[in-house]
Length: 184
Ligand code: HEC
Image 1 (tube, rainbow, N blue to C red):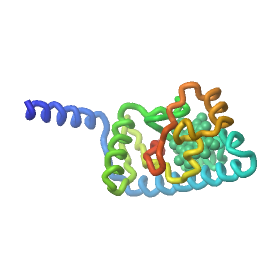
Image 2 (image 1 turned 90 degrees about the vertical axis):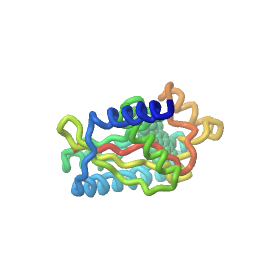
Image 3 (image 1 turned 90 degrees about the horizontal axis):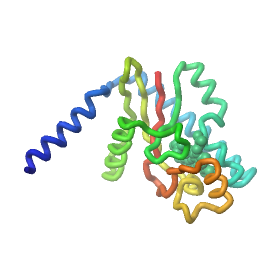
Image 4 (image 1 turned 120 degrees about the vertical axis):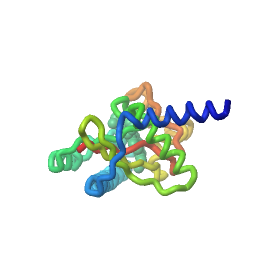
């Protein structure tokens, strides 16, 4: 029984990985890292600035790639499509697909064991896609993604109205929030 179960599990794993291929593309890994680092910095700076200027409710629209102009210029310059995907998403447009959820689960499990998390390039339908994990690495993120009861009422009201099906709450500090996705 146990052998059968392992067999089924292994087959599932293999079939899950058959539909796409993980590749090692050093130049894409480098480019992807550069782009995602720039964007993380830009979003965090923008969020901090808006929080200081207008308070948390006033900053809600700025945790978005669209809200920072360099996303557009980088996309055009590098001819890439940039997005963020999550298993627990706020904007349904950022929902991870089945394969991406597998990748996020893997990151969560490795992160839990304290392993180093590395970016990956996979090829799908003839296109190369770079993924890197996003960790909730700043306490500031929790003001909008942390425990529901601890999110300020003014923020909660705006979130409820804008994102009625919000799944991006109850995260803890240092948890995996999702992945950067850069389609080359
Ligand atoms: C002021 C509130 C606020 C703060 C602070 C905030 N976020 Fe967000 N976050 C949002 C909103 C609103 C969205 C949905 C944006 C959209 O519609 O595209 C979002 C979306 C995201 C997404 C895209 C996936 C999804 O759920 O739609 C990620 C990843 C993310 N946030 C990570 C972070 C991280 C990491 C931090 C801390 C550096 C952070 N956020 C801080 C409000 C916030």
